[in-house]
Structure formats: C-alpha cells, structure tokens
Length: 578
Image (tube, rainbow, N blue to C red):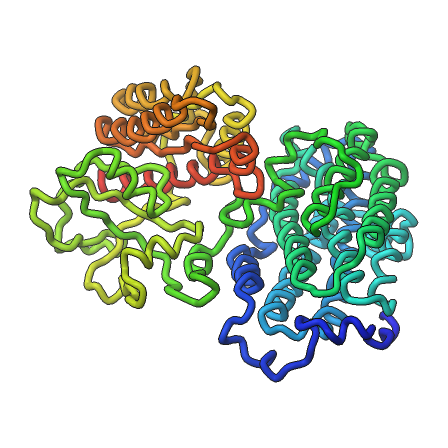
C-alpha cells in the first residue's frame, strides 16, 4: 500500500478541477461537457471478460507457439495483470480524492470498473495458458518475482507515493497507460497478423481501446489545468518512461522472441511518445515515423476511433446516441423508416440519408407487410399513400453519436417516443447472419487508405462469424468504377449485400467533386437497381491525413463500420423484407 501522500502543493489548491465544492455531489447540471462526453464514451464501450472466446487459444499455445513466444506472452500478461492493479491503486487512493469535479469522478469511477475487468481478463488468460502451479504463482506475483516488471511497477508507484503536483502525476500516469503498454500491445497485435491466439488478440483490441481512452482523458484534464508543466519537465517524464519501456521490450523481454525487430520497436515507442507529447500540447521530441503501419488499425497513438465505433463493436449504441451538447437526451436505440418522395432526385435522397449517418440507403420498394404479423421482430409500418411510399431506407444508429441531426428533424424540444408510436420495429441483426453472402468492391486508387478500410471490413466480417467463403472481394481501378461493379454483383443474385470501399481525396481541380458525387449517387442507384443493400464505404476527404484518420485512425475505421451496416442490412432484407 502506498504511504500517506504529502500535503497538497499550493498550486494545486488554486486549480478549479481540484477545488472542493458542494457541487461535486450532484451530477447535473453538467459543467464540463467534454469530460461528460468522455464518461459516456467509457460507458458505451463497456464489455466483460465473458465476451472473449479463449477456446482456440489453448490449442495455439500448445501447438503453434514456440517456447520463446510462450515466455514472452506469459511475462507480458504478468506485467499487464500487475500494472492494472497499480492503476487501480492510483485511481482509488489519489485521483478520486484529488479531482473534485463530478463529471471527472464519474469517469474515474467507471475506469475503476473497467480496470477490474482488464485485471480479470489477464488473470483468465494466465489461468488458461499456464498449467504449472508454481509458474502461475510466480507470474501472478510478477512485481516481486520478475525484475523487468518490477522496474516498471516501481516507476509507476513512485507517482502514487510522492508529493508531486497533480499535473506531474497526471502526465506520469498518461505515460503508464500510453507508453508503458504500447510495446506489449504492439507485440500482441503482431501475433494477430499471423492469425494466432484469437482470444488474446481480441481482448488486446478491447483493452488497448480502453487504455487509449484513459490516456486521452488524462490529456483532456491536463488541457483544462490552469497551471501546466513547463516543456522541460514534461519531456523529462516522457523520456524516462520511454527509456523504461524500451528496456522492457527490447532488452529485458526482447520482442525478438516473437519475431519482431527490436530497433523498429524502439522507434515505435518513440513514435507513441511523440503522439502523447502532442496530445499534451507540447512539441515532438523524437520526430520519428511509425515503423508499423499495420498498428494504425488499432490506432493506439490516435486512440481508436475517438470511440465512434471500434472493430470489435461492443459499444452500447443507446449510450452514445444520448449525447447532445453534453446533456442527456433520448437513450433509446431505434430504427425508423424514411418515406422518400418520388420526386426527390437521387442526390437529395443520398444527402437525406447522410444526415442520419447512413453508409448505404438500400431503397428497393418494400414488400407488403401484414398488419396482423405476430412475430415481435416484424413491424407494421405507419400507413402512407402508395404514391408517396418510396423504398423505406432502414436508418440505424448503431453507435455513432449523431444526435444533432436527429434533433434538427425532431425539433429542439421534441422527444421522439418510438415505443409509444403504436408500431413495432423492424431491424436487422448482427448475429443472425448464417449463410449471408457479401460482395466487396474495393478501389485501388489511394490504396494505402483502401487497404486499411478493406482490412477493417474483413476483420469485422470475421468477428461476426461471416464465413470467408461467403465473401467475394472485387478490385477495381478507382472509386468511379465502384458503382457499376456493385450493380453488376447485385444483379447476379449471388449476394445479400454489396459493400463499396474507396477513397476520394480533394486535389487542386474539380475532379474530386465529380468523382465523389458520382460515387455516392452511383452506389445508391446500384442498390435501387439491384434490389439489395449497397453500402457506401467510400471516403470523401479533404486530405490524406483526414482519410487515414478514418481508415483506422482517431475517427475510426469506416470500412469496419460499413461492414457492420452491410451485415445488419443483409439480415434485415433476408429475414424481414425478403
């Protein structure tokens, strides 16, 4: 247990975030919308250890991993199991007492819960992999028994025990969750590239996502502090953490054990440190490029998707849809049907769909639906003149927070109460996808982006148990060629949905507008013509950075999101509208 902390530094007493106030006992009214949004993101991303399937891991552990790889993984898990306990100690004994803002305390309270789940997950992994009782006990006590783990633990513990000002301790624990975990996360994802240990790598995906959010939250609080550290002090803390992490994964527990290059790993740690420095409002220190471009898929440095959606997609949709300027709004996930007028031109229909964040508007005319349907998953649509009923587009809000668009249509003070509207709901399922077949059309132009989008889509299909033999990928030169190919695939009768992937990036001419508009309207018309969902996963961005951020960077992987839409829409058409 840490010793009693020193007296609060005088500068901390002047910080609004740290000043005692009776307001801290009441959550509303929200005073810090940015902090509240982080809390809601944390809630939306909740998961449990029971959701991770470890059935294949034991087989891989015994037959697919070398002794060196088993040694590396077991000691990394030992560090993770111990480090989460240290993070919990800091939260419970210091940060929860330091910070007096209700919104931040809500985040820290939820972080404590999710860190416990991380700790449980790591313990389950060790229980699954390590069968020797003595070795298992040694790894569970890694802070005492493994020198490489002890040094990292000692560095973290000193910030709990010491009397440093809050800003220093905040930066230090941002380093713990942003830098100390980076090399090990990266090494585990290296195993994922090789198709090994699916349970371990999926849990790593979830946990790295969580730790990214925690690190981002530390950066947000730091930005809100009045008394920030000088450049030299921040660099000193970060450099110290980099040296310790570099020693851990390059010397004490070398990543060469799993076939990775130690020099490149050292560069990757420096790259992550530079990203953290920039997030804290400081200049880069190492000025190195990311040597592992595939790590953009989990975006450890950008902190996955800024939590609009992650590849594993365990976000709680209704939570994120409740965010509206920092205030609580409608907490119901729902699906509505737009009645698109006949006279509305295709581009306008597409724009209407985009208001709701739809990647594809599969607007084939619906079959008649009996008003006496007894299946609870079928809906009786509100009556409308036949001449005005045009292809109801299933508009979903899976987890991307778009309350402003919804509130624009609903009016500023009107709450849409779907449950009271007297009709049932039609919706697709992400799990009822047995036998569904998907065509994927991917443009090669801007291939560095479209490859990432495609990988995100394929990983999502795999995650939701879509068999590889039920996926056909067709490569075309550019985004302009995507719609006609999608239409051809759609009319073949071989597929339940078509996913269209491309990237159009603005240049110095009007070519961008022509291609972007043609791609959007073309994919829409392909779906209308073929009568099956054609999902729009074509990025239309101002520059390459914006595109990469949407291909696995801080704005998420839109290929993964589009794949989810394709699964849901294919299920909707197959089971309810077919």
